[in-house]
Image 1: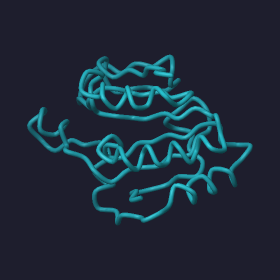
Image 2: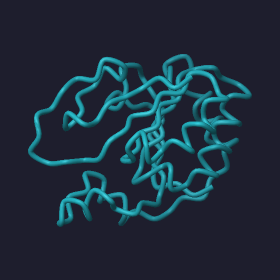
Image 3: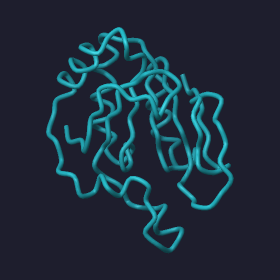
Length: 158
């Protein structure tokens, strides 16, 4: 599978120490809707793609045990790499029941088909909503982190 970045231990994107995996594709809907380039993850675009197997990602996670307590899938837009996301979840679930958090810029309605496919797995959390600048921030109770606008929220889907 292709990714842009892996941070073995991350303390920023979830209330628990997590492993962060950034996926490489995005349609840049946030930029298009706002009429300008404002992607908060645009630095990832310039990074080279990394080819790595789901098995290797799980090995890295396992090496960081017992510190890591969750897997965070971000990127640009992880749902635009949904086949790879599913492969990683299947491999991860073969060894761990820890939370998997997926950060998407899709709305809940736009992501409905993906969410339906994810419901068969345990402990899945999805953060929905586009990046919009200059909005009031809020702390999401599920994620335990600050999100950048009121339309972003997390939901435990399974």
